[in-house]
Image (cartoon, rainbow, N blue to C red; front, side, top):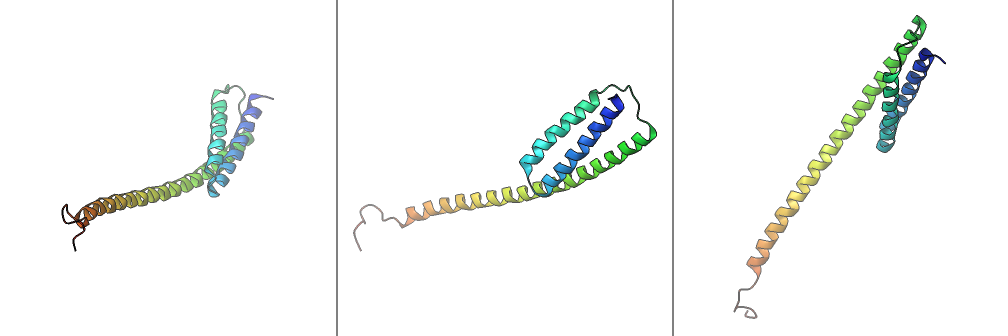
Length: 127
């Protein structure tokens, strides 16, 4: 194989990984998405380190451009899913913090109340 066909193979791998990552994001399979992303980054690094020797012909460049466009579409969809997940987690964290604040306020108020309702010394047992 030459550098041009190696380069195209890497772009094809990146396209398949981006499709898989989009699918994982759609199904909220975050661990799988992270694993696939690591492999995708490896592909990007491999591509970056490749020598610029053999140039792509016009047809190969056009094919490569279509793959890049599709990769970018997948990336946009993945980001949309991640943004939605981030918003969901932000709301859950906010809700949890409100619940914790309510529990603390309740416990503080309950402590004060229990001290006020206890009989004072010397009055125990009297009615």
